[in-house]
Image 1 (cartoon, helix red, strand yellow):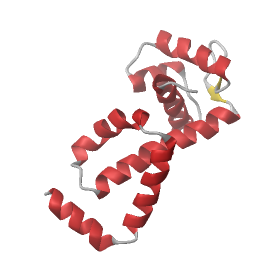
Image 2: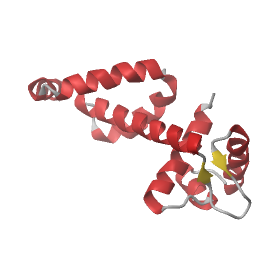
Image 3: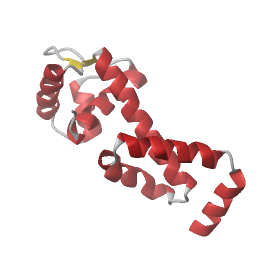
Amino acid sequence: MATPSMEDYIEQIYLQLEARGEARVSDVAEALSVLPSSVTKMAQRLDREGYVHYERYRGLALTERGLRFGKKLVRRHELLEQFLRIIGVEEENIYGDVEGIEHHLSWNAMDRITDLVETLEQDPEFIKKLKRRAL
């Protein structure tokens, strides 16, 4: 089972690979505001856990398991952002709120939030009402 910290690294590596086609230790360190040595340590741990292929002085690569999990983590983040927007949370608060809650929700809770978002999106008038109330 991945820890919240492991999830953050996997998510960031996934995002780097999607955006740039590569994930370098220095870029992951910058994105997470940590030292490159911290990324190296975590990359070694993620390698042992089967999420990452880590080779010194090379970029980071996700295993098939890491790719699947990274995609799931990014989707969770996006879905929570979408949910908070729908219910009218102010835009400047959304990223911080998502970062604060994403690791504390079960995957079952995420499934229910997914169902709720999909249902709400089918009723644009209800979404407008929610946003008006948030003002």
